[in-house]
Image (tube, rainbow, N blue to C red; front, side):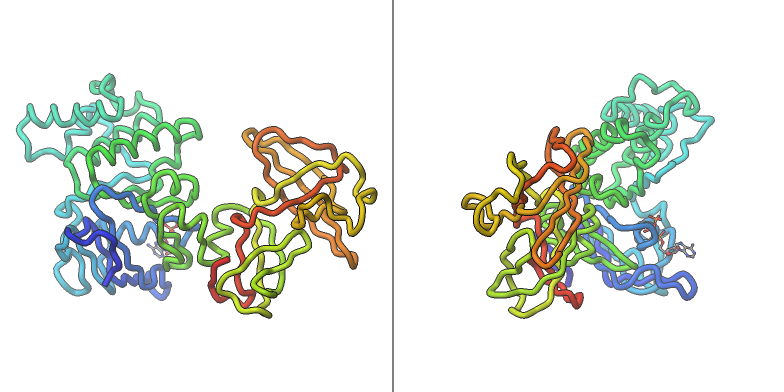
Length: 382
Ligand code: ATP
């Protein structure tokens, strides 16, 4: 019943219609998802949307109240039926502050879950994982002598050592500073792909999800709003929440006419929304293409439009503020139109682009970064 693209083998994880409540509080509402072998799926969403609850259900730390969980095609959690305990699930766990055993060396920490192997093989396997995570030089060290990032790598090596078919990662990088986080994300993804384990990763950071995930399940209030590849979520968002979760947007109201919606700063083509529908127009800051004008806009001829760019609407726009953020510049633009219409817009421009305050500008819209939805809340694409 789950719509999978690859169907020859059972997925490493399948969750069917999971619902979960804490007392009267419904934390998860009818969630179904699967993870294929070697696939990284991210549960992404704001705090409290139910991500950790789902992970705990898969790990066996919560019993299944409604729905079902299968690992490799085998039912391991059904309401009222035998509940396979966490240690029998062949699932690796790495949580935000996965505590290492302080009295064991790094090597022994990693070898801990390998008690079924003879001593020599245990150590060899543990060493192999430490090498993959660049930690072989610390095998004899004790956890308290390691940095946070190093401890995180050891925790990951320990979780991966028993070659679990599924890894569960709950905000595993959130306690690391930004530069270290990037590196460890990179290494983690590399190792996950190399060992071919499926992974379910919880994060509230859209960039982390985009980087790590083959597919993202974006959640809100206990249910999945949209599931798809990073590209699908970013470029074909199904609902305004999906657009805004990936960053602040400029929002305007409009009405569809002749398959287009007209905004004071440009027109956008619209599919699948009937003429006459009131719509919300969400414009990513990077959708605004800004060109500075040499002359004040009043000097432009005719209706104020410039050149042949019939989507240029810069006749009364000017820069209010420009800030360099590093790789991009953020501009606040004030756009004025007929009838006293005025809008404050945010634009994001790659590189260093710092026009003076008051500088007149032309705005062009990149329609691929503009999303239109019916104002009544029904989902539809632009
Ligand atoms: P965060 O990103 O903040 O960790 P989350 O998306 O992982 O959030 P959950 O931890 O799954 O969310 O929590 C979902 C909802 O269930 C929240 O409203 C939370 O307050 C509630 N909740 C979680 N655990 C319990 C519990 N043990 N008892 C009661 N309520 C709980």
